[in-house]
Image 1 (cartoon, one colour):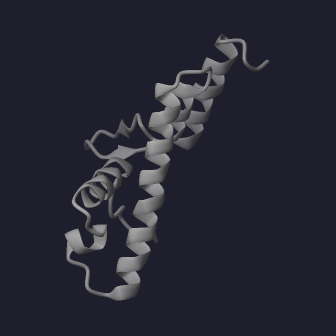
Image 2: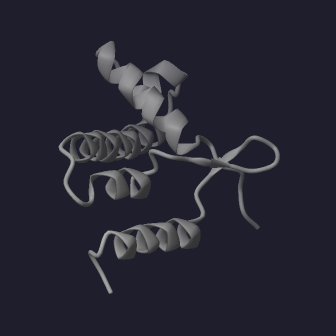
Length: 107
């Protein structure tokens, strides 16, 4: 049995950035009161935001892998027929490798 996704990557990034902008913890913006759950969420969103920021820096500095790193970091989400964001890891990997081959970066 699997559970539904609590937040998509883009929602998590937005929540983390909003909390950072206003000097709040993401868990407090959501009204979480259970300390352990709040800490887990805050730590997870810190990682999500750090990855997004790193991808943005890499993409803005160019280089052969800037755009590809942004794709891998989830900057280009895909949407299913219901409008829900998801990432197909195999498809992303195939796209990245195809682009790297086209650029002559790998065989």
